Length: 293
Image (cartoon, rainbow, N blue to C red; front, side, top):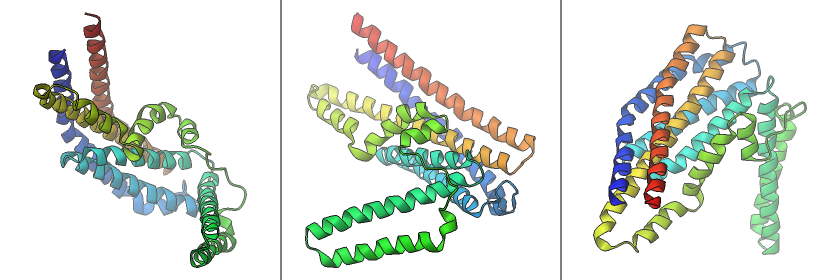
């Protein structure tokens, strides 16, 4: 069993070799985005101001997130990389969802959802303050509620009809952009690093019950698997980023050769994902086979 574990661990460790290609993809995307981000407002494909501003902002934020994930990995901050992967995936889902709508209906729906959600939370906070007789905080919250209502009243064109209602759940958003599998397999897994750190803590607890002379090897195997996992997450985040960049360029009517260049560059990442997935299948089958012996 130990020999199989070590072999699987070495496969995971090899995935570190993918980081140089991943860095090339990050730099490539940065160059592509910088080449057009300042002229989005001049594109006939983005006539609505709200949508232009949102697309511009999400392109920058997603790149910032993915760069931070890469830096976290190379500096050994793997749990931070895992947490940021969840954020990056959802930001890309926001961008893809906004780009998938007609004109600016989803962009307005995004702002409407945000304002309604903020006011709803402030009302809950206000109720809590009243229950605890905190008049000072309650007054401050009422001012905040009025501030958000004033924004909606003055800039009514940002949220008035027609607009497309923002998805009620994150799963619905991923489903509508055609990536519900990514929600189940990636987003939900990365969420553990945000909410509980359950997998990490469970491994720490279980290692405590392993014989002392075996603990070092087991911890090394767990670390290699975690490193492999966050590299896989980052690769998938970049695939999502590529999809968003490509959709923006199509909307801006870039020539077909330029868009094909983007698709070609993404193939390297798809190959990395395939290697990870094949190694994961091998690991599962090897462990199952060993259990039956």
